[in-house]
Image (cartoon, rainbow, N blue to C red; front, top):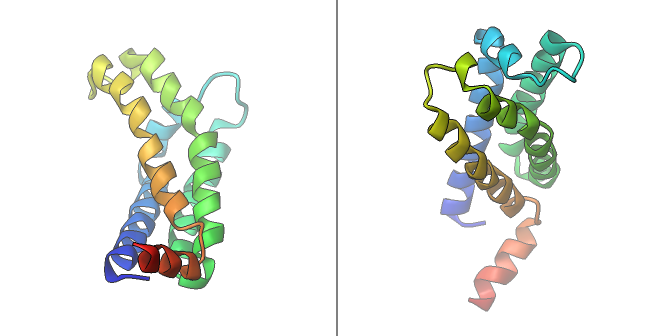
Length: 132
């Protein structure tokens, strides 16, 4: 794995750890994002924060990068409805513009593709580099 790939993996892991920790520091913000059809809002915020932090931490270890990458992809898809909820109810998130809330939806694909990069083994990275 190249140095840039290692740095990217550590950066994504740190970003997810920070986002996960933020679920505990700013729990009310995340509870407000929850779609009304889901039960147990505080509990789901706690679990999603724990999952984000844990998956980010696992991504820091090369041995666990593939599992963490798949977990980050699954978690990113699972929390997408909360991001849609934000866009549909901008009055609850006045610190953001309504346009900004809508524009951030397609940006959610970035961590998904970034995490996918780490779902492949180190040998896959070597083969790709050798083929280039």
